[in-house]
Image 1: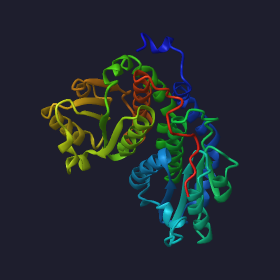
Image 2: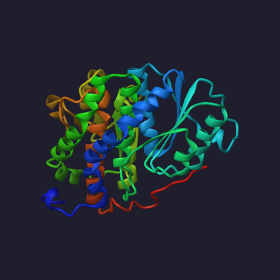
Image 3: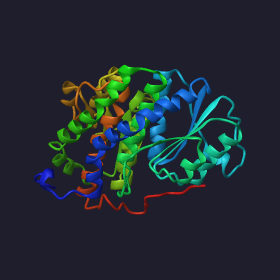
Image 4: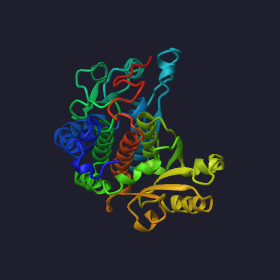
Length: 353
């Protein structure tokens, strides 16, 4: 493939992957004070969170289920937008903070959920990159991503900015200065993750004929499994199925045979031992292991080791652990002779009803 990725001309996608530390820092600089005021207005006004989203934004919503559940003790439900739009049979939203996440803010079904929340007298919040979008205008409150124009079809910087916006909201809602300090350290760790992964990318050539794989995470990184699988599907045409390590054991592990590719997201944290145990099972099954982790002894088991920096709090690790998955997907697309900036059959803004 490339002798040196640093010397190769960057695609638009790769350039936007590299922008992620600066985008997150810009978001924190611009939105910390407004979000602090926002949570002051919202505190005590809701008992749970209902989130409407699609695509990568829906994967950010999966992160919110763990983040707000564990760190703020709030139940988080994922909306079923078709109930609001096509069926026109919206559920009662008593007690909800209704949130829409969309980088473009254009999708009619997500907007419909926000408008229904407003009609039912519930507080509404848009997390979006477009301040003048229909979603931002429909919501009572908004958190802007400050990502600049995202030109690549596959979302990268708007995804991690959405995670960062949720983490900022969670920390300020909890009035937890330590967590805010932790978040301020993430842009530097993101930069280290980007720089540190390039030594591994030439080995991605090994997978140029791969047609299927599974991607596994658990806990906070359940969302990462879904997002990495989505990037692989979007950019490489590989059938990539995401699972939690628990769900994978409940049937899908039967797929595994000699050389079956499994990509695992396994940073240190509360679910690490479970993933370590699954890796031991997969070794017995002679699976082809690709591992994203900050634990060197675990990476030794990988046919392709994708290291991330150590010292990242588990609840913020999805902002870091997704980066090797983004770059792996980009490199695999290039190895297959595909254009990572223009994946076939996709367009940047998808409007669903």
